[in-house]
Structure formats: structure tokens, C-alpha cells
Amino acid sequence: MRVIAGKYKSRQLKSVKSNLTRPTTDRNKENMFNIIGPYFQGGNVLDLFAGSGGLGIEALSRGCDYLYSVDNQFAAFQVIKDNLKLLKIDNAKVFKLDYRKALKRLCEEKIKFDLVLLDPPYGKGLVDGILEFLITNEMLNNDCIIMVEELKEVIFDSFDQLILIKKNDYGITALNVFKYQG
Image (cartoon, rainbow, N blue to C red; front, side, top):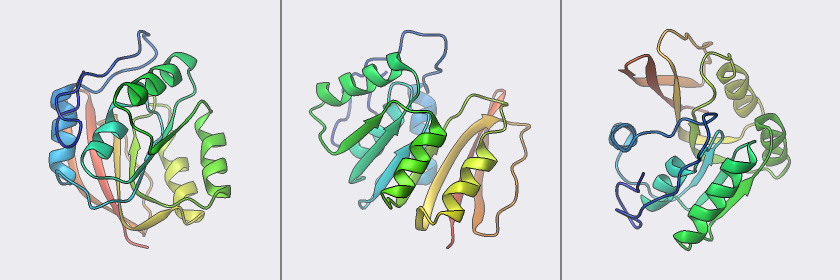
């Protein structure tokens, strides 16, 4: 697993040695970032089910200002910290928390996001509640991009403020890209 483009291009990343995480392949990661635009002009990124932290680190590498990386597993938390240390990244905060507690804490800190990466456990119905929380608590900057990887048959609730701008199927999963219009 490596960083595809930007400041940390071609740098190798550690991955979590556990069957509880699914690392995004380099090919899928490249496809994701090609869809939303290859580079960013700053902003905060939230990687809510971060695993090894590869997606959030890719966003930093491509120009995001600050990363909030969240995973509930200790092994994932440790690998994210190791990857940030390996690349000498200091503009990131890593939380070993349940996603609900992390969202509440970030809300209390009044942090707003320009990019949200959601790759939750598939088929658990978590995405709608997360999107509702982010919208209701005004945690998204206007034009925030939200990338959701989920089983392709999953239909999400409709939110007036979210526009589905792209959906790409990859085998049993789909990448859904939303844009927030506050």
C-alpha cells in the first residue's frame, strides 16, 4: 500500500494485519481521487473508519490542510500513528474512538470539514445516521465532498443538502460521491 500522488507520492504505508479492516487498493484509491479531483486547495478532512489511514494521508498528500482520522480498533489506531510518524506528518489528529463518540467530540470542538471519507463496515446501515449528524450539526463546509464506499445495492436516505454527483460500481461495492450544498 502506497501514497499515489502529491507531497508523499510513492511512499509506502503500513497496513493493519487484521481481518477486521479492508484496505482500499491502490487502484481504487487512485480512482476515488480522480473522481473528486486530483488535488485540493486546503481544508479539513475526516476519515471516519480509517483502517490504516491511507485515504486520509492521500488527501493530505494532495493538499488538504488537516486530517482527523478515526478508528475504534487499537491495531488500526497504532498503524495510523505509525504511518503519520513514518511520513513525518504533524497536521493530523488520530482518535481511537467509536465513530459516534468521535463525531460528538468533533462537533463539540466545532470542527467543519471540506472532505469526508466514509468506508464503514458494509451493510450495517451506518451511513444515513452519520450523514444526518454531520448535516444537522453543521459540520460540513459548503461544497464539502463526501465519499462513501458501501455495498452497491444500498440506497441512502435523501438529504436536500446532498447531491449525488457520481456513483461508480466496483464488484460488490460502490463508491458514492456527494457534494454538500449548505
